[in-house]
Image 1 (tube, rainbow, N blue to C red):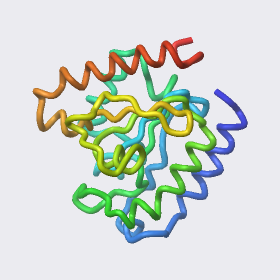
Image 2: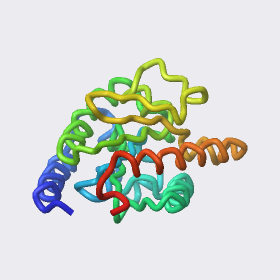
Image 3: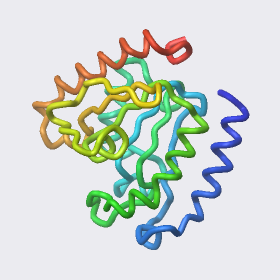
Length: 195
């Protein structure tokens, strides 16, 4: 891990913990800043924390997170070893509803600053909302998951959200194909992820 980047992320997290920019703040238990290695070449971005994430203060730790971790393990990725995971919004929307556009707009500067510190080569957007905010507003996640986009020299891939896979298990094989494709791209584009 990069000591300078780790310190910068830690400082940014301290700042983020006291954020009061939107109406999600009063209802939170924890700010869910992000987790992973500071010099990750691959960054996963979800939409926002759910109930378990809000309680524990870490992204993707509920049932969807357990599934995500299984998929990551299958392609030799791990949140503690070689990737970084964050969300568009850092506080849980009530009843796990989609974050509103104004909530996303208030919170996206935190994600941009995380991105600027980490400088990933590949961004994987978990689900429609993250993909629409990061890749393109009119994304059709069921048709375009697994496709590659390039923005500012960064490879971007939308994938199906793990929570959607729990609701619709028949989509798991297609989602796993996307992760296998991601593994190949990492091997081509990244130097240290599998190092």
